[in-house]
Length: 233
Image (cartoon, rainbow, N blue to C red; front, side):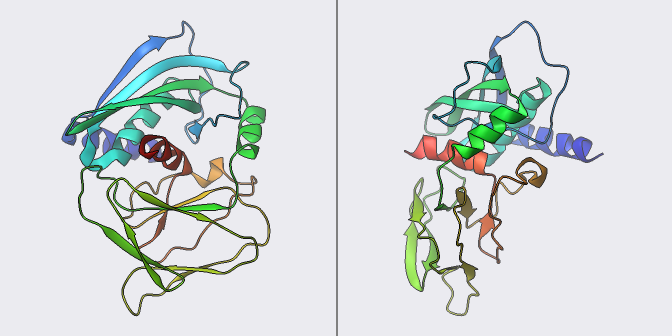
């Protein structure tokens, strides 16, 4: 039932934002066992030499809602049996953007090692997922006002044991209070509430820290976050 609702939601956005999914090259056989909970970003430290390559795909749409483009790519790739992907490149013009991914079916052991290879003790703060939005976003870090420009993000290199307070810019805003005494995998926050649909089933038992969010700040899918880092860097 949940996946049916998700399908309707994604297809509606696909039509509204004129999104297009394309299979560029496809392996002859598609895995029978499919895990609809996982679509994992494969980092550069992880070798895909022994992984099951499925296809190279592209997905494009309007820049006004990039997170929806990623969701279409994720949904269609999972239907082909993929549970992980490597970012290849992007192409864009004034109004539209296209991303290219190699998608794979990987083992639980590979996913575990891939997550171990992820960077640690970093917190990323993004603004809008509208890549053409010129409006600035603001937030406070330890009481100091920070500005997020279009297609920019803040990277906080966290020192273990220290206390962080992240809040919206309003004078009386209640901050997120964060403190960790052991290493954690990267956390991705945004000011606008997009991308909040990563299954917790796919990340449990891997030492990923969950941040309690208030009003303006939202913890979003790290895999979408890593794609945005590739695009913005």
